[in-house]
Length: 102
Image (cartoon, rainbow, N blue to C red):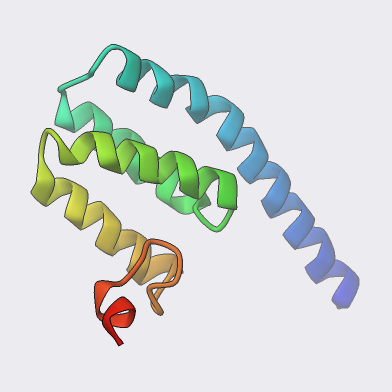
């Protein structure tokens, strides 16, 4: 049972690394070309969210969220909240202003 779980985690991590290789040039292109198409940005964020358990993918996701914020702050906030609901209920990775005040 433990070896099966270990294998599952290793497979999941390998898939996240593969996704990072695929999405990194896309995100860089969006930012370099100053993409203003919020639908296109959102489409990619939808798929990236599934891999945000990985620290490098999270950084890429945050980068694209920051870019989207300049175009559609409401949509960017929705993606930040989606990340928090899925991966960061404590607000430790994306930040949580309420926690920082105490």
